[in-house]
Length: 135
Image (cartoon, rainbow, N blue to C red; front, side, top):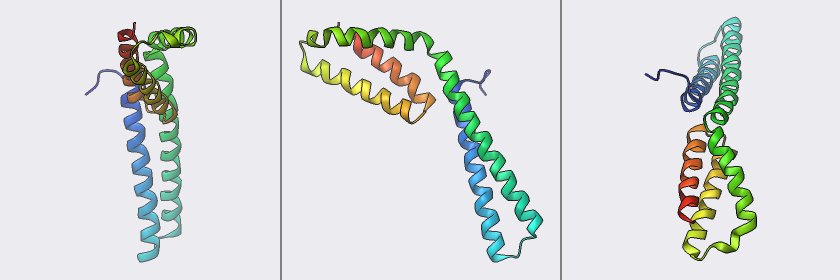
């Protein structure tokens, strides 16, 4: 078990809450159709599922904030690299290295858009490794 709550763990827990909420909703709807479910029980299940969905969403937001804290140094380095790239894109002598660099940026962008904490940290580190090789 992890000793501290980090972005990846919080994101995984958020995913578990989301899955549980979806299962509760499915159960409530199925039971209502197949076996008459007491209206109070049905409403309670739906309310609980809604609460779990809200908690899952909040965990995802928190995990994104934790990523920022965990990768602050790398993000700062990434800003500097962006400025360097603007000024020196023509420095690439090797087209393969340019392609790797661009692919690294695309992969990082996808991880950020998907708000995937595990991948954001990984892709930042992968990109920084690629960038350092291009020097």
